[in-house]
Length: 207
Ligand SMILES: [Zn+2]
Image (tube, rainbow, N blue to C red; front, side, top):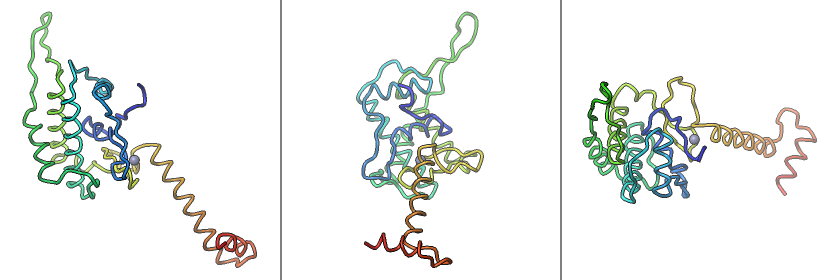
């Protein structure tokens, strides 16, 4: 299902955070609605898990919100209203990160190849470890949040110029600024001209 998820946050663990949008509002948008959705998200990221369970979905959501809380704390961003508390969140991420499997190798037709990570648990462990590496390592200074206060999606900004997570937030905020500017022009008619037009506009709003 093309366009269902975004994969441009910079790292897979950040892409997982993006599966829940508008976390800073009273109506967050959950995109991992069921096990099948988790499967589609993983496949979109190039991983085809062997099987999927209800427990996998719950674990993915729990790790996602724990990573979001830890990252926001590290970046000095206020947590989402329903975010897990700081010690508990870090414990969840740590518990997953230590389970990271380095991956075995095997011979196939005379060549050595790495065994594919196939279980959801292995994938979550890798994401948790990547999250901690990012937050404590070189990439941290490039980590930023979308300037939309209801979105706050985290992403890596290697250019130093990325303000919004994507076009939707950029356009929504451009429209919002334009409307605010229009309203302020109506509420505060042009000071310089003191013209009849300004007075007319002011009169219309006060009604
Ligand atoms: Zn955004």
